[in-house]
Every structure is written in C-alpha cells, then in structure tokens.
Image (cartoon, rainbow, N blue to C red; front, side):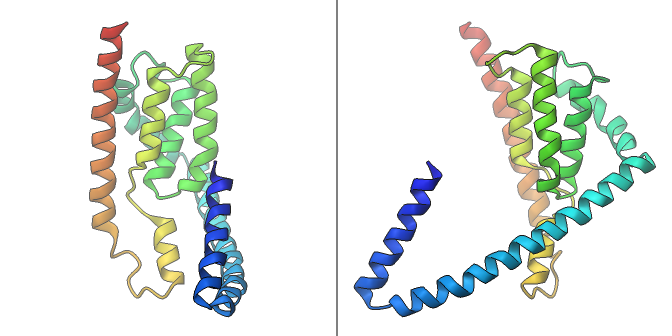
Length: 195
C-alpha cells in the first residue's frame, strides 16, 4: 500500500513540476535532499547505537531490573492474567522503558520479542489477545520522559535548546497513553459482553 502512495507522490511531483516549469528545481531538490536523507539515516543510526549501548550498560548495572520491579505492579494490573515474572512481561517492561527514554527505534526488538512471548504464553494462535492489543496501543502511544531522538534531530538542525520540547512531549504522550488505555479497556469490556 505504501509503495503506491509514495510512487503516486513522486509521479505527482514530476507532473506538477513539468506543468509549472520548475523541473530544474525538482532535479536540484532531488539530488540535494537525497544526500540529506543519507545524513539523516546516519545520524539516526548513531543515536540508536548510542542509546542501545547505554541501555545495555544500564541492563548490566541492574538499572533495567530496578525499573522493571518499579513498573511490574502497575503493568500487572494493566495486563490481566499475565505472569508478572514471565518472559513476556520482561520484554514488555524493556519495551516500555526504552520508549520512556525516547528510544523508539531501540525499543522495537523488545516489542517484537514481547509479542512473540505473549503469543506463546497466551496460546493466541492467529487471534490477538486483549494483552497483545493493549501492548500495541501502549507501544504506539509511546509515553516518553526523555525524547532523545527528537532532541538529537533538533540539535542537528540548529536548535539552540533541543530539550525545550520536554513539557509538550510529556503532556502529549501522557494524554495519548491515558486515552489509549481507557479506550482499550472500554472496548475489551464491550467485546466481552457481545461474546
């Protein structure tokens, strides 16, 4: 689906550039922005490597386990029927911790592992369980304390105060996470009544 969307954007850009007589601007932009895309990818790769290393150090130092112990009571209430000391819960905690630290890309492997473990623990087969749906919603809402990736991108693009977005990020991510959890719980109850 996305390949058709992006292909359509490219075709429309060429058509409108030709109709408006700005093919030279389109060519210049395509070449210069292609280089910028590579630079952006390398910058993001560096950020992910740095924070992945920090997460590994934090894990070896026991910080992740400490955070896991702090989050486990809350997450046990959210994820009903899930073993609080099981592998799935461990990966869920790692994923949420990485998201809290603003490491969206670094949290992806934990999220994939959590879904695989949820599938095993809950024997879901091809149907998503309530816990799987809730986890995807929480992961998508991405509650963040430190928006590291966004701050690094702001710094790279010349921001004098890349962390000035801290309060809006906290408010927005807390609001989306709260609304997501409430809606998921309401919809879980509605679907149970229908069954």
